Length: 432
Image (cartoon, rainbow, N blue to C red; front, side):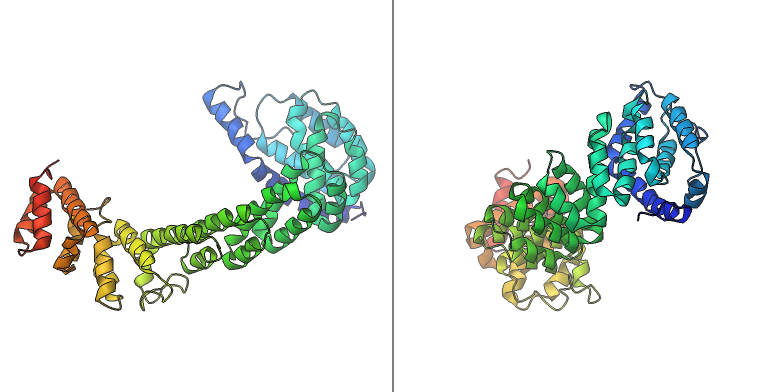
């Protein structure tokens, strides 16, 4: 990494291009904010022209070959004078920072410090110090002491780059000389590391915990939730090993909910690691609600993936509460498949449980789609308080949605306790 010839600069610049676009993503909030200001007319900036102010081509080896201290000074001066917002020009200059030879780094820093509008050059300073860190991280740290208005972005470039190139060495030094801003920079780095190599991000968090425990909990949750997107069960096992249940228990619940928006079985496995019985059941209920609502109908297909497939029947570890929640939320989007759901029930008890909850899940649909579920329920269902409440709610909702259809169906229903309960509800005010 200490070579400063054309080939060495080209390789470094390829990395720099990737990092510069990464920084563009990291600072998307800032860029969106500026764009919004342009659109609203509040900033005084005008939209950038299509052409940049004589900046070099972004092709890395061409940049390396064209590099001279004079050309970079000229490019910086032109950018400093711009009144238009030029994101492409800034991106090209960021790339150019990664072509600066080791012996010219301090000279380029002095150029940046002489710019009239330092606010425009913060990202370039970050890129310059990232380049510096690639070549000599300790020298970059010393130089950052004279970075003036760029001190924060200099530190950011050093921390994020050093963690990427030598995580163990970087952590040893950073944690021994931590600044208040470092937590944010480490979290920023771990956010990207968690996407690419979440297990490595988790290992770094474990090391941070050894020397900076008060910072660990803030990083721990972010890495765990990111890791859970790709390997939910491994991430959950790591999270569960954390020593503070006040952190791990609600985190595992949130992870289970996150995962359940995509796949059910792994989400349940995450929820099952929660040791608090009440919180564990709440997490399972949330998982079942998402499973039924978002992909319950697809789960009945034999070709569904293993994390979703229940075409052969409800899994043996599903409780009555699980089946009830699943069936109730199933009606939101898959009411037409209610007969298919009944087909996977193993006995009449499960079918009654499905039907009882199906008629409770009609708040967002035409209740008529669940009318046959009432037919399936035994007359004894109307005897209990819960059954009476469900039948009353069902007919009241249907009467509000389509009174003619509701009353025609009710009139055709054979005499019995269920019909009596619903007719009584309508006669006592069901026409609301």
